[in-house]
Structure formats: C-alpha cells, structure tokens
Image (cartoon, rainbow, N blue to C red; front, side, top):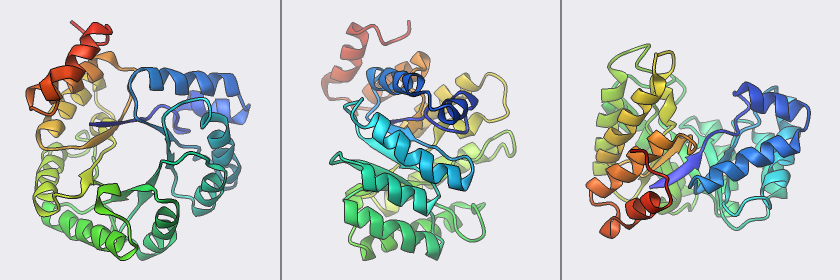
Length: 266
C-alpha cells in the first residue's frame, strides 16, 4: 500500500502562510515528520494564485527534495508550475498529480509524464465534471488508460483516482466510490488505484472516524495507494491492520514492525 503524505498543501492555512513568508524550517519539519511516519511519497501542493504557484512550486521542490529520502508527488493543475518544478527536480522517481480526461489536460500532462518517466495520477472526471454513476466514471477511466497507453506510459506507472466526493453532500458517494473502485480493478487489473481519502468526511463531525473506517473499506475493495495524513496514528494503525487481515502483508511483517516501533494504537 503506497502512502502519499498530504500535509504540505497550500489549501491548509499553516502551509499557505509558511509559503508566503518562505518559512523553510517549518516546511522542512512537516516533510521530515511525514517521512518518519511511513510515507512513501511526499505530496507537494503550492496552489494559491496562479502566478504565485509558478514561483512557489519549484521553490518547494528545491527546498524539500534533498531534505527527505522519499520522492515527491507534484500536485498541481497549473501546467507552467509543473514544468518549472520538473525542471529543478533531481530525483529518479516522481509522481505527477494529476490529469483529467479533458483533451487539453491529457495533451499537456502526459508528454511530461512520459518524458520524465513519472508515475501519474488520472482523475475520473471530464468536461462535465464528476459523473454520477459507476458506468459513466468507467467510461472516463477507459479514456484515461487509453491516453496513457498512447503516450507510452506503462500501466504500472498509472494511478487512477475514481474520485471521492464528500458524503456530507450526498450520502451515496462512499458506496459509489467503492463500487467504482471494484469495477475498475476488474476491468483494468494492471492499473493501480489511488484516492484523496479525507475528502469523504469533509463537512462532517468526527472526521477522523469516518476517514479510518473508509480507509479500511477501500483497502478491502483493492485500493493500491492513498493520499493521507501519516501523522494520524489511528489512521495508520487501521491501514497496517487492514493490510494484515486481507493478506496483503506477507507474514504480517509490516504490522509486526509497526507494533515494535510503537506506531500502532492500542
């Protein structure tokens, strides 16, 4: 299970303010804590105003890439910011988050992903937004997969996000996501899956309880990666336990190692 650490995101007020004042120490601490908690990729989102993001994202990349051992996930819908960030990125592995089924996004992002040998996240949405049925989302997923094939991106480097919509706006959305995930794994078994997990609980009370429960369900339905907060010990405990219970942790070694390291909640 691939863990993409979500905390360095300009949508969070502390991160946005740290970017504005170029608080390198604060941002480095956030990065190092997430790596120590078990993240495999560090999501980096500098999205504020478009022109500011063009300067902020490459600055963040240069700041963080040598400070942590894990690769970065460049999280932006700004093509110019993405190009500049990739231009200063030095590590072998990188993830691009994300592109949609819209033709202009495909043509801007996938050539970059192919050129840099990147992992890339495709979102199941198109010109009309996020579809309301499993069948319609799968049509967009097929478009994303075919586009990646056409650009020479190996399927094992493609992650599809079926898209999590808050249950606070529509109580059917958790079930719809899980059914889409199940259908996607059946139709495209060689493509990996990912989601921004905490979107499910937006606007709801006791969000962490919903996030933990949803993570266990998603793992049961075959989710391969999640964009989460690795500093949430309860969430990480559920992750390790779910993988062990579902036979996705050989000899339960990761669960045992997490227990011995004091990372599991009682």
